[in-house]
Length: 259
Image 1 (cartoon, rainbow, N blue to C red):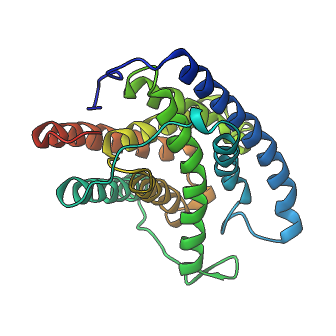
Image 2 (image 1 turned 120 degrees about the vertical axis):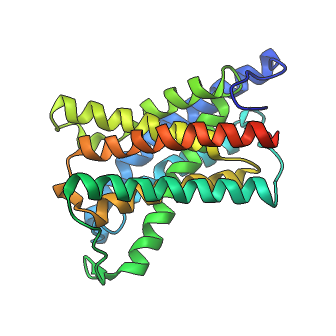
């Protein structure tokens, strides 16, 4: 399926029903898992600046959906090699660079990468953040986004997925309404960026999404952390989408590659 098009053939009723059940199972198990993992966090003594176990809840939900309704979990495209995947990797790195650049410009301070975070070597912290991002991506941009593509176009699927991803971050509910809404807008922009860039098989798509997600998280962590307003952070994701999405679509159209 190429960018901006609906599925070529509508799914049969049985497949649609199984797809809906899969998404419902994912949502329920992810939500319950998130509550449980939030309760586990203080017990294991792991600082949230390093990793929050709740990030793995969407992946747990995706696994449950796959086990419960295998026929309802959508299949992904075949692996791609060479140019298309290399371009996707470069665009994902470019998006990450824009996150860093925007937050740094707004704050008027360059990124600072410490030797350790909460007593953990920074290299291990980055790896932990990448694993956590992968956990969220398997659920949100893996099962949910790809599943919604069965019934609608990729931009609509991305907007719906981005909204749910934004509201998934319950830790921000106490923020001023404008700041939270800009963050949710940023989550939508983040998802649009991923949907426009990712290509290939499931794991290739998850690699691209994890790079973009981790880049956003590290841009926040290394350019001010809690001192950065989420309006700034959300703005960074919007700016990156404005640059990367049209670029990705133009390159895809020229190359004739499938999304």
